[in-house]
Length: 119
Image 1 (cartoon, rainbow, N blue to C red):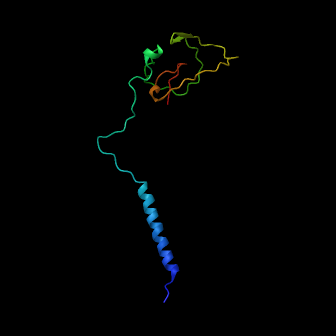
Image 2: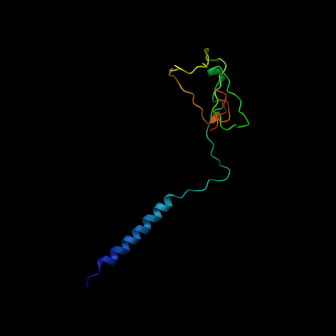
């Protein structure tokens, strides 16, 4: 007597589908972090070394102003012995160079144009 293959195949397929679903679900699980262990980003002590750049980073500002977008003309400043003079007239300004990069260490500090950096 021959056994019907369709019910067997259907049962095996259902079992394989359940097993695969269980494996996928188990792969998404994570273990709880042990108490007392907290992940912190490793940061160097000083991001903007005064000895390297010749200027100090501005202190963190407590009050965070929203909005901004105002034009401010800054004072002349010196970096690594070179003086920079902000221009009031932006017409014809086509100089290309290095851009400022503000990371998470700069959050809450004053930017070059006097605005508070809000990451």
